[in-house]
Length: 357
Image (cartoon, rainbow, N blue to C red; front, side, top):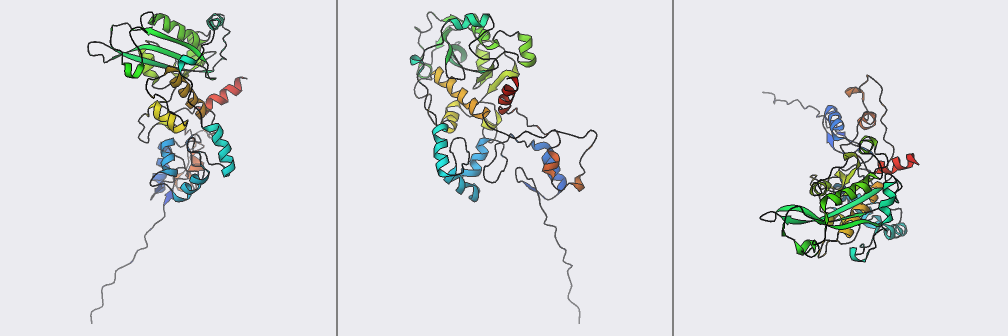
C-alpha cells in the first residue's frame, strides 16, 4: 500500500522587531535599524502621555488619543484626564480642572481698544536700550490688499507688532507701492480713507528693523543673534516678502511651517484653526484684526516654547558604529548617534535664555 505523501512542516519565524519610539514593527532587525536612522526620533517629538508613543506632529498625537482609530487604553485615559488643547494628561480630574484655567485663553481685545507703547520706545532703541529685553520674541501680522490689474498681487497695507506680554509695539497703515485695485474690505476692513495718510513702505521697514535688531549690527545678528529679537509669525516668508524685508533665518519662528503644528502630511494649518485648537478661542470672525492675530501667534509660540523636554543624549564614540546583529534595543543605541529632527524645537529658546542670564 502506497504511503501518504508527508509534507515537512517548517516553523515560521514570527518575531517582530518593534521601534520603542513610534511602535512600528519590522520583520528584520536591519529594517528597524534603517528606520531608526531615517525617522529622526527625538525627545522633542510630541509624545503620548499614557503609552509614551512618539508622534510626528500634534495632529498625529491627537489622532492617536482621540481619533476614530485611537488606541483604546490611551483614549479612555485622555477622555477622563486629558486637556483638549495642549493634549497633556493630568494626574487627576481636579488637577485637570486647575490646568484648564491656565491653558484655556481668552480672545485678545480688538486693536482699536489697545494702547500702543509710547513714542519714547524708538528713542531708547537708537541708544541700544530698548524696553524689549534682548532676544525676546516679537510677533508680527500684516494685512494685504490687492494690486495689479486683477487685484491678485499682495501688498502690505497694515502691519502690527506685539511683544511677549501682548503689548502693542508698533502699528500703522502702509502705503502700497502700486495703486490698490482690491481693498479686500470684507477681510481686511481697510478702506481708501485708511491709506490716504499711510506711512511709506521704506519708512515702515526701517522702523520694524530698528525694533527687531534692538541696536545690534546685522552681521552680529546673523552670526549668533546678539541682542536681536526673535520674530514670530504665521507664514512669515509671505509677510517679509510683502514688506520687501530680510531677517536672519535663525531668528524666525513660523507657526505655519513648524513641523509639530502642521497636518499629518506636513501641510500648513491656518492661524484660525491653530488658535481655536490649541488656545481655545476664535479669531478672524468678520474682519481680520492684526492685533488679535499677532497676539495669537505669540501665544502659540510661547506655549510650544514652554514645553519641558529631556536633554537629548548626543554623545558618540569616535569611529564606532553599532553592530546590527548585536543590538538588543536599537532605540537606546541609536540615541547615542546624531539623531536630531529636521526642525529645531522651540523649547531650546527657553534653555538658551536661561543660559544667557
